Image (tube, rainbow, N blue to C red; front, side, top):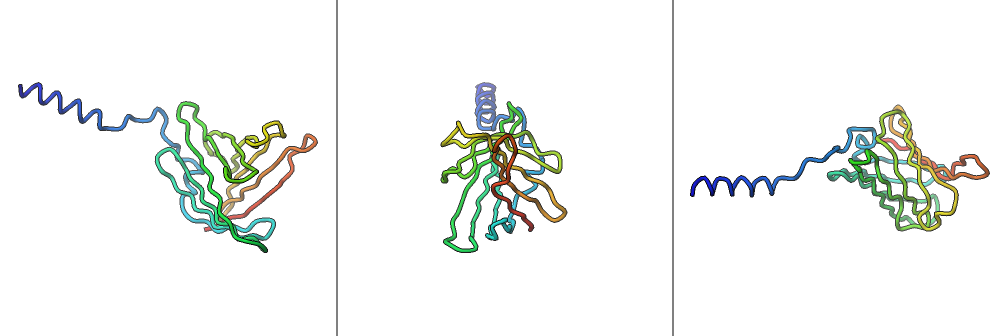
Length: 159
């Protein structure tokens, strides 16, 4: 009877323990962004960007204060897909420029998320590029026009 109870307790403990991930979230440059950043855009808006990591998902909360106009908030999601070894990126889902894309782990100075506008997938592809700088990073959106990548938005961020 004691052996049966010990085995049952072992099964219950094993079921309560989370299964290890096939590929844990990498310790890449994206995860190093956890925390608060202050950014200035090419349009002279100020943003506060707060990166938070919870298990396999990095959430980016952005508070935008335009040079003129009303402040607004954005929320983005970067989910690590261990099986594919890629970040699955859902950018600004509450706006018309809702971009869905993916990218491998960020291991170099530059990192590119390739995607499309979810509302209009027939439009040319878009890219979001992060580049490490001496004291932070830049974040820039590009759209393909006439076969060339054209910058549509850029921000420079520091702690």
